[in-house]
Image (cartoon, rainbow, N blue to C red; front, top):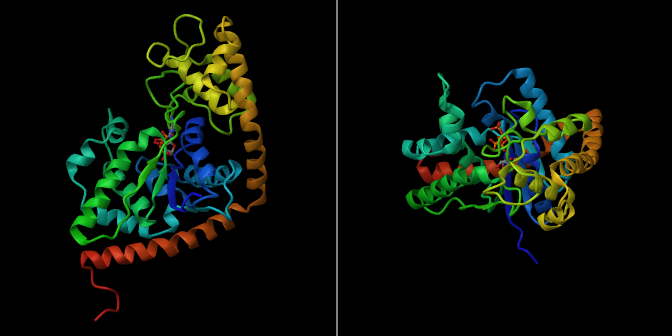
Length: 333
Ligand code: AQP
């Protein structure tokens, strides 16, 4: 029997969710929900660290919440909520920002990637990791299911929890990352040196969970492949094909060895054609459930209930953190 632990994770409504978000994070959200006490949020406060169109932000937020449910999250098991519906996130975010060193934030690769070449970079993008630490620490989470790209942010969260406990006494739980063994970093279809990202300007570089079968077929047929024609898993020498094989494995449940054996001597053409059908079939049930959930309007009720449960837990931690730091309690003597 596994011990019941607290689990927290989130996804930004900064675009349409991709296969990378699904394979790297959401699959584990679903896998953990029955054995643990899970909180999954749509991190809208993080999304605005880069400019967002208000109408698009509203639509994407609702879409991500509906995709959580369509992917298999059960709102009676896991609390699903909007980050901005729990004010404690912003407040603890500020408290932790005051304890985060500039040097720590300057080392973050996500900040470097997202600010590169931009003239005006918002301060929110810089302090994003302190807010993410607050998200996790508010729930005294033990496990954080994330893709590989979030490892560095999670390390900082662990450091901040340790720093807080050292300065103010044992208050926060130091969390552990929960990263999939295969598929922790799905790469772009046009460049296997970059991760697949929902906010990429090139829509051909990612597959969204709501792409139509024809869009999926077109994107996979145009996906970059390596020199040669053998379908071999070799990340060093065949990064593009290895990435496509990982997607195949994750969408079909087959092992990389099985896939390699199936396509021996067949070349990339047959492999890519089948891969497109594997992805289409894997997404079909999710897409049909998504349509039903959006049409039912039940998402607002799910988010309200989720936020109530989240607020109850988050407010206790915030109160204890503030007391430990020396803030005068409201109405205190
Ligand atoms: N390519 C990926 N492979 C595996 N996991 C991934 N994740 C993101 N991309 C991949 C995981 O998905 C979760 C949600 O990520 P996020 O929305 O908080 O932000 P992100 O990591 O920056 O994801 P994107 O898609 O690249 O968003 P944008 O383009 O807005 O920055 C995380 O657990 C992440 O690891």
